[in-house]
Length: 431
Image (cartoon, rainbow, N blue to C red; front, side, top):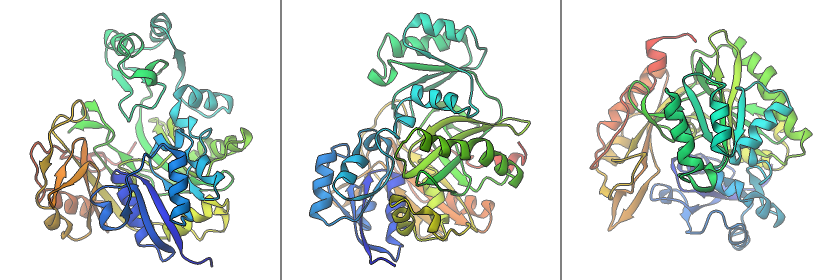
């Protein structure tokens, strides 16, 4: 066994707080740092304010602080090639290369990658002009799916019930430059019926292991209404996922995807997030790839993880996942996102958060910080997704009850959240 490792987690959201907490629990973790971190992370790691997409600055930090292992949380630094810059200076990295990160940074690249390797996905068109968008939309029916090809922080997918709404979404991006460079190319695709499923595939590019199944809740409002967001809550595992379905997903989606990484010589050591749609007949298709852990899925998956997270990341970073002792999760977890007023459309003024200690005292509950700041000794809601309240339990019902009990103890001006996280499980138990 190697000696203890000095670790840096790159990022500042709820996902990174969950990563830092998992690292802090690890017997293999030596000194623990975060760049830039947040007030919650600062309780468990030493935080440093650096630009997370500046590979040279991060490499210098790693050398100065004798970092053995860097764990990259968000997609932005990965797409900017941060993993490549750190590896070039001898730092082990949990996160794919800049080339591998194109699977998320470019939906055009991602969809064409799936097509090349015959990985099941929705039929699609790539569009760069309104004329191309009009032609693409004429080939589909409601609901219309219009996606920005580039990175848009979870805000680049439009599901429109009418053709005019879809045209307007395309027009705003292609003509109005609503999302800047991210929306200069669009992917317009068929809508897939069924039930969504998130899978986090831990891979060193050769071997893979699956974290627990999980389900995200993208819409802002109860009943899956309102605008798309970065995610308003999640639960794990998804109890409706059978072994038979998982066998099919492994065979038809996961194994071909991991094999394709090798065929295309993509240096991929980290997590491949596979967003799936499971059709009513059980047929799985890929909705999207992401090149990092999901947020908020991480906040339910890592509290359930039974092994040593730092040791796992070290094995992956060194291409040695096959020798890592994998243990199956035994419990359930559910999380609820507390967002600020105006999310996802607009930012709101900072507001003091009350009740964090009382919420954290509820059995099985951890409160992860996302959009928070520290001001005069107070923790403030700084806009966007502010907190993630996660609870574990022997059953999903127990986890849900604990999470909402804790949510009830927290308050800040303009706080909004969904009351129905997990409704898919409690309303019906089949695809």
